[in-house]
Image (cartoon, rainbow, N blue to C red; front, side, top):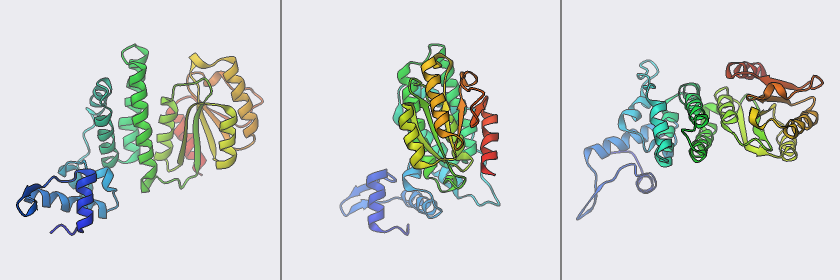
Amino acid sequence: MTGLGLDTLRAWERRYQAVTPTRGDRGRLYGEEDIRRLRLLRAVTDAGHAIGLVAALANADLERLLAPASNPPAPVPSAEHVPALLRLVEGYDSAALEVELGRLAVLLKTSELVHQVILPLMQAAGERWAQGKFRVTQEHLLSGSIRNLLGTLVRRQETRGSAGRILFATPEGELHEFGILAAATLAVAHHFEAVYLGPNLPIDDLSDAVSVLRPRAVVVALMEVNATAAVRSSLAALASRLAPMPGLWIGGSAAERCPDPAWKNVVLLNDLPGYERNLERLRL
């Protein structure tokens, strides 16, 4: 009735709780709703979606994914995304946060997910942290969930890096990673392969990664509070090692304080629209 093999059915039940049949004298009992849901899940996975990403979706969301191109589904309501996600962060509910982010990652196009959910969420969280309304632990919880989401996006077929590879990091001494997380998710939306190396990375280690991975650009971020002379000096050393290629792209509130006029391969990222324009130019 479902078209699923026994092993697949058992695996979906055990690993993903796709359905929960009742138990009878003769074994498992499946109702009409179980059959309907399993058929939907099979159709969605046949269409190319990973069962691990869709098993937790409601039936209505599964039907949304199956809507034909000639009859596109209604857009996913977005007005409550960010407040609802912030409430999960406030309550330290990392499991529910990752489930909801994963659901949105399946239902939205990557560019929609980034602009409608991820960027507003990180901006709101950053504002709350600056106002003392978020603790560092909550910022770290959100960063971890977005890192996991970034991995999901990279694995998606539509976002594989046909435009090339870009590395993302912050220099040693810079612990804030929202900026490079935002930049990495946007790069994925523009069909680059994002290699996310994380915050507080020693320049020697970053240089070594560049020599092995040979990216088209290296994106770093530096906040004003961390723009010490030592950090700026390390970025100068990195720029000289990268010259003439790949380019070093610097964002963050202290970006304009970093480059020396002699640096030929540095791009200053004043805002996200400017960053996206640079991504499009790099694709050409």
